[in-house]
Length: 317
Image (cartoon, rainbow, N blue to C red; front, side, top):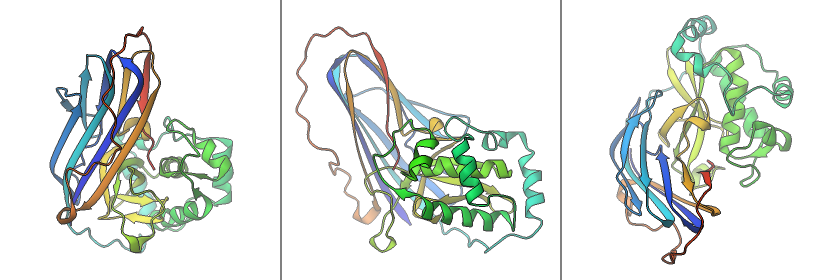
């Protein structure tokens, strides 16, 4: 299966700013059954884009706009191919917990077992764990299937009820949120069981027959757990799915703080707004110049006192 991805992000500022610096984690991973065959990142205003690989293997593009501007558009285009993933067993053997403990003893996995910025214990999380009777039982794969389904039934999908920087307690208290919240909650529930668990930022290809809860025009997030004999397996609590060939991975980390699609700062006294458009389609139906964002008039230069530095990020749905 081949997919084309178009991801446009536009930052608009209420007054001209003097400089902005942006990082983007939008290049799909080439890992497992997924390969990124082509990727292009462009910006308006034009900028020189450089890249590096972070400690989790993600490609990070970064650029600086050192001149005055009132809007910034980042456009990422990619072509990804999937080979057919192997069938998952219905469950793992009784020895799976012991094998998992041997794997989890490796130093490189400690980051995915410890609490992190957005996936940490709280009294509300403890209450949910008690409600779900969360303890080691059966086998790890069967338990993760159960947790995914219980998360799906417990939490309502409700965009705009949380923010990009919301702690998990906001969604726990309201029992609703978006994919970013659900991924963080599931990670925080699973890691104390001794199952290495990481956050995945990426995209989901939506088909009408699948009735996915997550939004079509946004990036997506889910969870991957490391299981003996299987490797990293994706679980999507937002849509009650095992992540297979419709889930396109862009970056992985401890939680959202490691993998935001865009993250940056700007210098200036201005409010900022964010517009995001995402299109994921089979390549034969892809139109590369589709305008996903509304037209914006050219900015009018104005003299302002530029001092403040602020951070702008986008929430995953």
